[in-house]
Length: 223
Image 1 (spheres, one colour):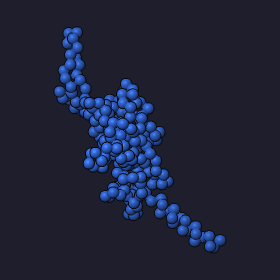
Image 2 (cartoon, rainbow, N blue to C red):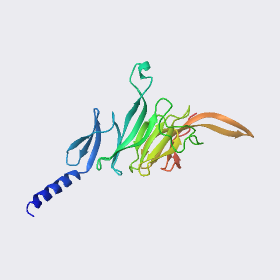
Image 3 (spheres, rainbow, N blue to C red):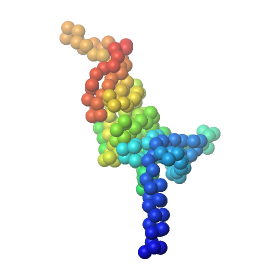
Image 4 (cartoon, rainbow, N blue to C red):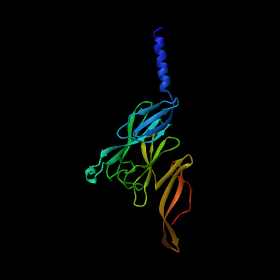
């Protein structure tokens, strides 16, 4: 019994050390590091050349991106490039690393979302991964992809259900507790004595809730 007590004390100390709260996740050169509330930092080993996207405190997930496939035409372009990027998550508590989805850079490949080739998203896969932002509640990862000639597409990845969701056509500006700000572009149509006329293309900033419902317009239309 006496010999068991020192072992128990050691295990309790180790458990306490492991339970330190994360106060910051940051990238330093090519490394991603975790800072704990006791001042200690820890470098984590991730898949490939990892670039930090952000940290969801709610889900205790570090989101990062990593190139996964070298372009077949890299030697012709004269520089190293990749035609697919993996968006992954790492749980510092369990040490589990998993793939969320992939995006392409050259127009082919990447994850095929459930809404592919639909009226809201008439494309086969998702290409590009721009302006990634984790929502303040830590439940969603918002980002842009290439889409129409005059507009990108805004999607989000639900970190709880592990599903891709189409959000809006436009450019993602910011995500706050007030909502999701998107710059949209469209054509102003009016009925002039029975004749349908176009007043031209315009852009406008709009604030949407997490379900994509318009809360309010944030600026006047600009023609």
